[in-house]
Image (cartoon, rainbow, N blue to C red; front, side, top):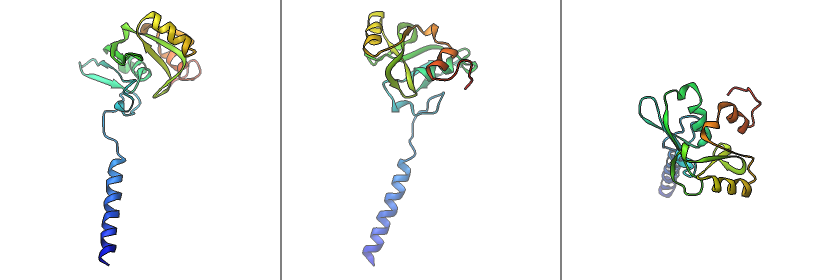
Amino acid sequence: MNSMRILCTLLLAFVVLTAAGCRPEGERCRKCGMLVDQYPRWIAGLTNAEGKEERFCCERCLFAHWRSPLGAGCRDAWVTEYYQQKRLPVADVLFVMGSDVTGPMGKALVPVSGRDAAEQFLKEHHGARILTADEITSELLRVVAGKPAGAQR
């Protein structure tokens, strides 16, 4: 009987600890709610109108937020560059659209530093187009996501 009680206690402890582990803790993407640190190769961010940093799971969520009314007044946007894995301002990278590389949200706008590196990435990963941050619009984001032109979220 005593061994049965010990077994039940251990089983109960296992269930409680497992359930607690099923609730991931951490910072969530400002746009989609995914855990930001789950995809460190893709983290992006900006400073909001109140001067606080907001982080995103990837470049697509960053731009979707920044190009929406919620992004009004945001500044200092940055992404994690694909090869160097460094945080760089969006103005310092080019974005390759249509490649075979996917990010946390699926099809990615892969941030690459320098024209030569972007062109090489485009060739190696079957990309379709190289863009600057200024060329990434809400409409383009819908196309990347595979939504019909003019579709709203």
